Image (cartoon, rainbow, N blue to C red; front, side, top):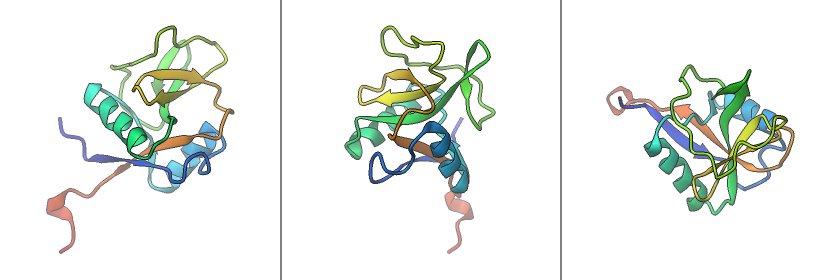
Length: 130
């Protein structure tokens, strides 16, 4: 399955959003949502964006949903995860950040500021105006 999505990272770091909730709002204003990671390829692409812009971490779209985890603003199921050793480790940490290793850490949604990854739709090449 080919996804017609691209990753965008806020620039400059740690200025764009003070909390995960603010990051969600900023992504929504751009017509997207915090990135949903459904496989190792998505995870690698997100990690490469963090490294490219020399960030030490970035908020992704994973959030605690009831007793499990899901993707905020996405209809995608929870089929892939890449938690760091010992994570998730807190019942009060309901949002997720990705580290430069590509591993995930649960964090409090109110914590920040930090960079964040938005996923916004792109126009397929055959539909772009000439």
